[in-house]
Image 1 (cartoon, rainbow, N blue to C red):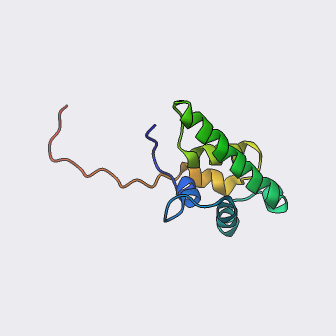
Image 2 (tube, rainbow, N blue to C red):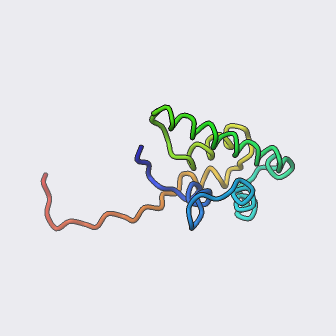
Length: 107
């Protein structure tokens, strides 16, 4: 499924693609995206990232259509209360380049 890239999923994905769960956690913490519970329960957050990735891969293997892995992890962490308002704002921050203005109009 095509999704519009945003700042939070790009953080989770990382510059070189898939990152291990502990690196994702460290990135979220460094970028101040974790709630107090997320900071205090490091191992639980990492475990939830691992479970979320495994569930996503299982759904993909069954041919189910859904969001990308990074979106799946972001929503699971958000729903569990491990991400803060800053992470929510990053989720709303689109990172795709703006479309160039066309010199013609169809309407």
